Length: 102
Image (tube, rainbow, N blue to C red; front, side, top):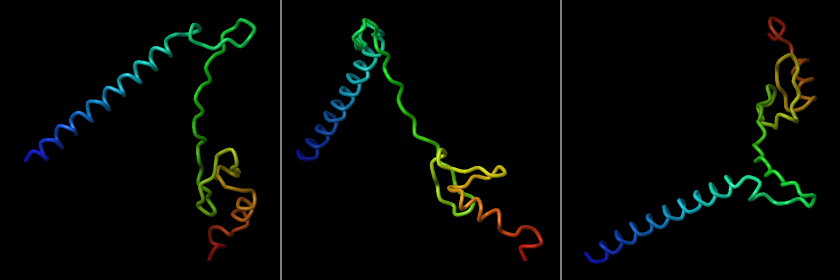
């Protein structure tokens, strides 16, 4: 019985510590973010350096021909359809359509 009680107490204390650390990190981030030019680094000529914006992940597209997901910057768009490479766009374009496909 004592062991179960001890485990419950340890769990509650652990949860409290995790929440306290998260609050401290959020408070620190808010304080440094609200500092403006005062907290920014000096780039040598007296002007404050602006913090860099976080880089977002590049959108992925799905190739019409093979179904592989590729970065949008590497994709090829032909007639409104998106392909992972020029070779797949060409192969898809030479495929028969409509009644010719039978």
